[in-house]
Structure formats: structure tokens, C-alpha cells
Image 1 (cartoon, helix red, strand yellow):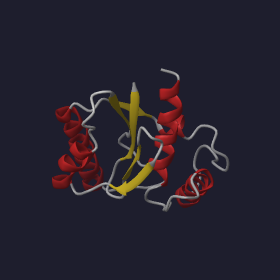
Image 2 (cartoon, helix red, strand yellow):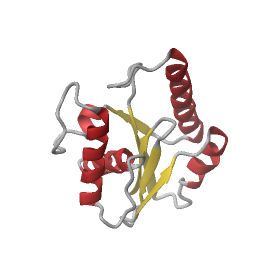
Image 3 (cartoon, one colour):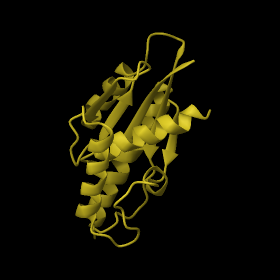
Image 4 (tube, rainbow, N blue to C red):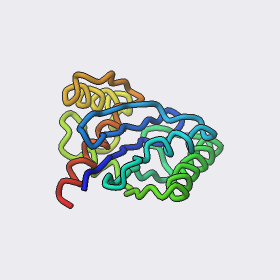
Length: 157
């Protein structure tokens, strides 16, 4: 069975990356919540021999390196819940993946209290190295690397 893989970095500045069954990759910013249903629905294939799987970054109640007000965390959590609910409603199977898992093996990342900006730049540099043909930004690099991780995991299933 052919697979279409979606990697999602949730959040206000989140993005999603699709690896189509022919190997082509597409990267986009996450749409506003009212457009999310149509966006995800459009990623569902018409052919029944294509399986869709989504790897969604698992998030918790703390953003590393930031002291965020409660309202920010509430809104972030609400958006994350909407994203999961839309995928469930559309029948898109998804796996939650911890940042520690999809980032494992990426050079230049120091564990612990590293500066968040330098971490984001190291991740973007890695995504650019792997995919020089894509327009990699600080906003979409995580979704690209999550999709790469998902593709590796799906090869072993």
C-alpha cells in the first residue's frame, strides 16, 4: 500500500509538510482554524490504495526557554485540541511524537537549557541540508524534520 505522510508542527507559527506517495514534498504554514478542515480534507487521497498517516508533535504545558503567560498556553492548547479533533473527525490516523524523538541524531542540538533561537536555527540548517530544494524557514523547519522522521518510521511498518 502506498503512503502519504503528513508532519505537523502545531502552534500559532506552526506548519505542515506532506510527503506524497510519489516522494514529492510540500510545505505550508498551518491555516487559521476555520480553514483547517478544508486543508486537511484536501490532503485525503481519492484513491483507496493510499494510506494517510500524520505525525503530530506531542506538546505539553511548558514551552522550553519561554515564560509564557497562562493565556498564551491556554490558546495554544485550545488550537492543539482543535487540530487533533479535526483529524479525528476526518478519520486521519495520527501518531503523537515527542520532540526528543524526532530531533534525535540531529547535530548541533545541545540538550537542556540551550537558547531557543540557536536551537531553531540548528533545526532549520538541518532541514536545509536535507532538502535544499525546499524553501525552509524557521517556521516550517520542524514540520519538515517531523515528516522526515515519520517517513523513516513508516518504512519499518
